[in-house]
Length: 175
Image (cartoon, rainbow, N blue to C red; front, side):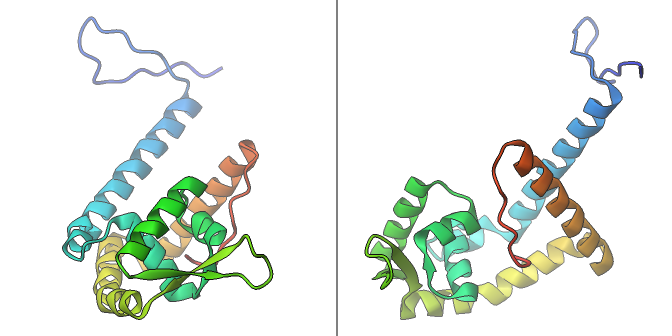
């Protein structure tokens, strides 16, 4: 058995739980992923979305509809990873802002599509290019090959974690 490790920054007299090497490595990976995600998200710009009167999650809905076309609310929910109640609330807000409308599904009367309105189409068409450029800039710390490798590794990690919890992570195209 490997010897336990402890944090090197523990103040004198304070006790911390000990972790074995596998746990320590996993914890470090989680912390690094979270910090990287937060740094990229901060750089990409919540402020820019605020300037346009939308939240990052509302932007994610607009972006999904922009690239995928009309989607059932359940499909939007899975793409942007919110709860079913959350997607209803978010789409309601976008409807109130005149950026999205709901359309009846001809195959299932209970189902509704989220569809960009002309105003929603114009807004996302206006702000997406600069957003994509900021993402590219934020990711420039890695080469394109490293970005592809990181994508593959993180997808593998996500699928493995999803299978542990019994949830299937949707195997989406690159977004």
